[in-house]
Length: 79
Image (cartoon, rainbow, N blue to C red; front, side):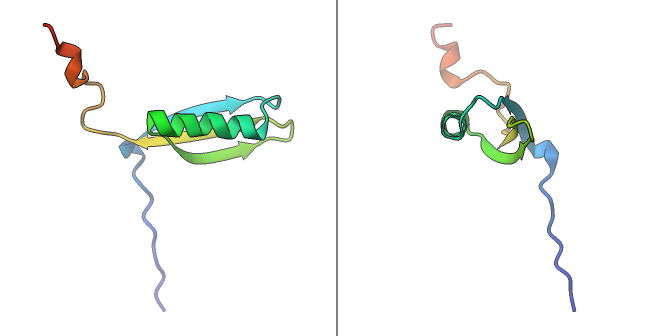
């Protein structure tokens, strides 16, 4: 009998963005906010924790690229 091992992704390969959503934020509003972050920021959902007071702690992640921290190609136009 063999046991499968699942390799966890290296945390150094990802950028993380922690968010805290208060209990007043509805589920639909929270889903829309996370969808916007995913669409325009390239983030994906890593973890959601729901607390007894109704607040949520969300952890988003995205893959690090070699170009992170560099200027976009059009930023140097006109120089």
